[in-house]
Image 1 (cartoon, helix red, strand yellow):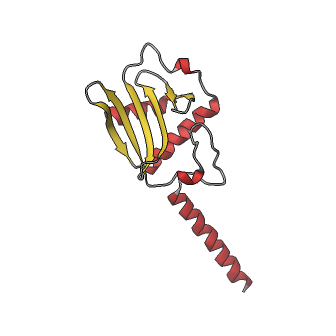
Image 2 (spheres, rainbow, N blue to C red):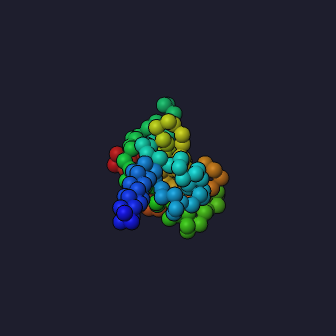
Image 3 (cartoon, rainbow, N blue to C red):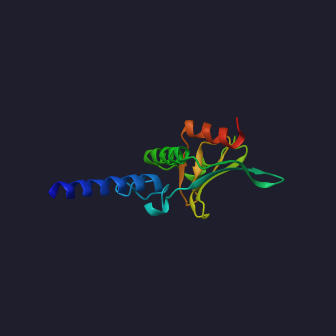
Length: 152
């Protein structure tokens, strides 16, 4: 009888872990709120989508591409979390002489709740997290952002 209870307990734990990993972006035991992930862990659920936008003088904000790829969403959060660990940057580093197009990335749930939004410039390397925080965009993430937005 004791073995049966151990088996049932382990099965419940395993199923719970699988459900949490499939439904949520973050593990509740390892989640930390910060400038990138400022909502509660349970807000970060799938399905969600990424919108890669750029400013067009005639059309306004234009979606270059959107995606609901879980790996892509996790990659963006992971890179920005890593950059945040290196420290925030002063707001004056956000704008520079090589700014070019204004761009934006939004990760939102399908009920339209925004989980992450940041602005950046095609020629810049700093993200404005839209909550008063500025962080560097890692070079590999920047390449991927441009590739996704402009398909190059």
